[in-house]
Image 1 (cartoon, rainbow, N blue to C red):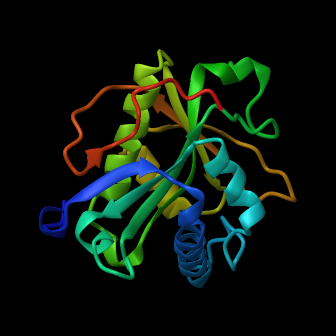
Image 2 (cartoon, helix red, strand yellow; image 1 turned 120 degrees about the vertical axis):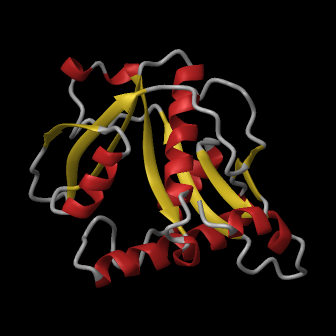
Amino acid sequence: MRTNTLLHPLTLRRAELDDLRGVLDLLADTAGWLHSRGVRQWPREGFGPDRIIPLIEQRVLFLLQDELRALDPDGQGALVATIALDRHADPEFWTAADDPGAALYVHKLAVARSWSGSGLGDALLDWAGATAYGSGLPWLRLDCAKRNEVLQRYYRRRGFRHVRTVDLPHRASGALFQRRAADPAITAFRDLTAAELIVA
């Protein structure tokens, strides 16, 4: 973990509608970076509000915030990462044979480029796995770009097993991964999220 996680204490909290602009900017920056590397996981310009507002309203979008920068009058740079975690199993990918209700699903995982390599993606995946475990679910699942071998190797290193690849012509994503839910100690950030089952 990079030392700036110690110099800049981080807090995980649920996103609010006031956070929309910052979330859209972070996702757009991430999407632009992915496209610059030839990865078509997300739309080049990121996502529109119509894709993010429902996640906020359903209380399944979470933000990692730099507590020190959040104290600045303009709050610029306070948003460090985002992750959505819910029970939505994409029906184009996950079938009845997968027991879709046996997992929580990760979406919109993004870390600000200035925090790249800090281990925050790992920490958020661990938090998501702990949340699934605490909800009594055996699996944490996600899908990613079919042709992004670098990202797929990353998930494998993080303990995810490749389930299969669903190759639909209208979807860039389709490589399905899962790992067992577990409850590791998470020290990279302070967790302000409520200890509750995610019912979205």
